[in-house]
Image (cartoon, rainbow, N blue to C red; front, top):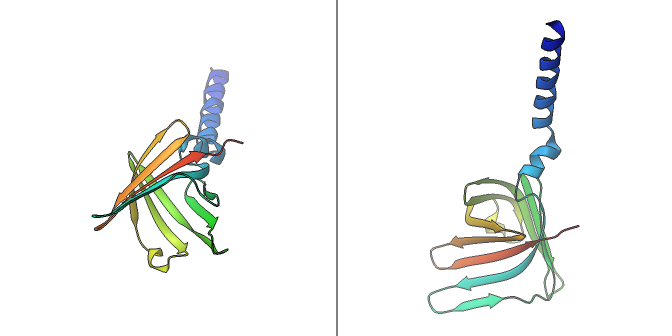
Length: 140
């Protein structure tokens, strides 16, 4: 009887440790990893701009709770940002702590989000513009 109780307690302890293992939690997060921007679309009342070819790569890195992105633009300047994020169902919410567009810092940005295979698409509607970005997972 004591051996059975010890075995059950041991298995229970292993289960608790496995569930709290950071590597396990990151693997359960569909966003964690490295992503490359492959498509953008911006729609206003009178203009639609779509981009599928970029002069420089834009990379986004996500850990379990934080993100950072960066790219080098044509003016030889680094653009980027990062901060915390949360996700629930189809809503991906970012909390920029730093950004090359200073007005984004401290904002709460909610994106409609879908992941299909290695493609992640996010969309945001503002008062005047609808943004769409598609990112492709970088597989090592």
